[in-house]
Image (cartoon, rainbow, N blue to C red; front, side):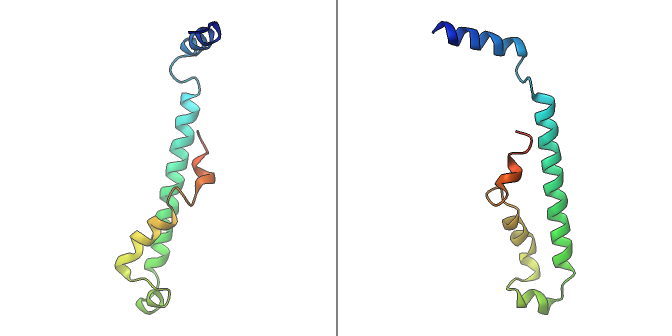
Length: 85
């Protein structure tokens, strides 16, 4: 192991396992809470539509949770996933 790596390893060990741990965890908690709130709100809005309106946009009442989960997948909201990391 090179001297630079030993110094880097030692300095990271002094900071503990996660120097940013509390802030990282807080960011993750906020992100998950916000995503859950958005998901529940979207489901509630779609549930308010009539069967005719749902059919017009191409989904059935049983499809609502699956459709909403697809809207809030991590691939679509990559900008928000970086929050708290």
